[in-house]
Length: 144
Image (cartoon, rainbow, N blue to C red):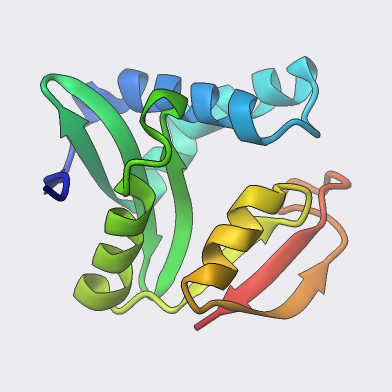
């Protein structure tokens, strides 16, 4: 059974940020503790409210979330306890088919995410040497 996708409220932002942090710690091994602590308040206080946000839940727990800006996937994170259960694919399919998303930027060093998007039809069209904060984390610009 596919997870249900809902639109969270601002009251869910703390839990969504916890999902982000757990996911990043499991997949973004190139980030230091200092990096995570730099991005965490940005996620909570700026980035979540800058996108159309959707999430999946199991019971009362948020298991993953998706942030969209028009036709671009700005964020897609799955809690590590729920990885490999189809949540990422469900959120991605929702973004592509339901919201007409066709673009995503991915940290090049997050090889699992790069492979995930490639497996689902995305191709790299450009490489940026720095992330949007100017940090040396190369970004792959990918499109369907």
